[in-house]
Image (cartoon, rainbow, N blue to C red; front, side, top):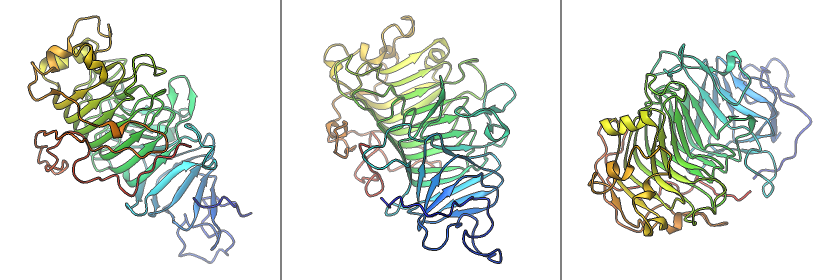
Length: 444
């Protein structure tokens, strides 16, 4: 971690020349506004022209910074720190080009010194686009901010490009503006299919790890560790894809590994949430019921969502593995619009009653049996077996290992140009540990 010595020069990112240099400098990128040798660049204003943040500076967010009508480029190895009540938002008129590497990831983290950092120290990273969402009128304002033109997302451009985020960590994010109005570690609203989200870790967020508000963007190599709420959350008609997704919950906090909705106000609104997921690992805390501060479940699929979960492991959750909740998602499951295949389930709770492990008690009024639809007798590709993933459970001061010791074979993913067809194993990690080098698991 770099030192936090802040030079006297406060660098507003709307400046056209380097801070401390004269106005004749015309070849310096807008984002490189700190004088040579200055370590910390304070970001106080919105970004309205193409800007580059470089690895030789630390960028300290001192406001909710909106990128508008411009591209923000972030070099590998760059450190971005957020103070309380700050965030970085890429509006629908802008793009982000943040391409780290395994050896030099881009890190978005708290401005508080290591050892004192906590979930919710700052807001998080928000990407907004113009792809379809299923709200009335086709446009909405992203949660976590007061409504404004800058917070709008949604439209008709299914391929809209919000930009690229690769090899990046987002830590200690997710402040709350109010009840049910908070930012996540990474929020995507209406981002389209040209958006690239690959090799991203969200660690110790106050709310969800990654939330998809509609759109068609896809996710790959996603690690969500110790969120205070859900891991992967989707609603408003998300129809993208995801492969190699990990969620690890803690003993005391953390709700669902996956929380999925179509639309709370209109469960059958179109486009219907209908993502395709392959190679997912969801890890609970493996504690007896009641030890966690809230109900802890593997995947809750509700209010009209469809979707497909394949080649996955759902393990060690206190309360349930799988809950199809509400009549509209039950209808999707019954008709084949919502499927779970080639998936292994396991928990200590299975020693007591395998059938109840598939549903949160009384959550759907007893009108639907998850076991009858997705249990091993109904879906022969699924299994109830110990994946031998105990090294993936949270243990303070220890980096988790997400490759199961058990050999769990799945199916071949689709050859559509996005999915890695060699991933015929169950879970997110096979023989290659793609987390190595760029992820981190700090306690604070």
